[in-house]
Length: 168
Image: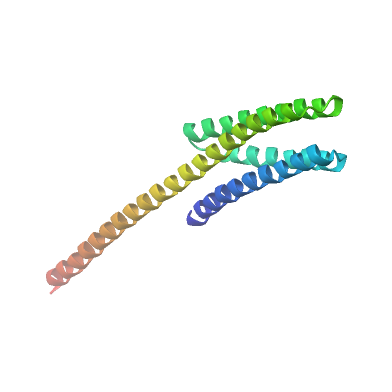
């Protein structure tokens, strides 16, 4: 049980790191694409999306409370808005690049990315709080087991003494 709990905690932490790293990677490819207009960066952007979707699906599977499921849904919704915004901006860039339009895009994108990051941090914080609570619960159970075991040993010793006295 402890190993499974440890794997779950490490898995959530790993997923949080993977999701934030993927977003940052994707942002890097996006910026390079918009500046250089190189299709290789455009393709790398979409490959990063596949990594993000795989990790978020895994996190969605591990979300074990209504609050976590809500946060994961909000991350997915904001991420989908970001992807839609990127597709719209990249089509405008191809047709008619307008400098002022890109600044508006950057502001909208920045807000979405900040929201995604905030939700991911909240998921990680909630997972850490859950882990601490489970650790405290496990400690309380261990103490109860020790008490019961000690009482059982004490009763067994008393029974041995009682039986010895009766036999003599």
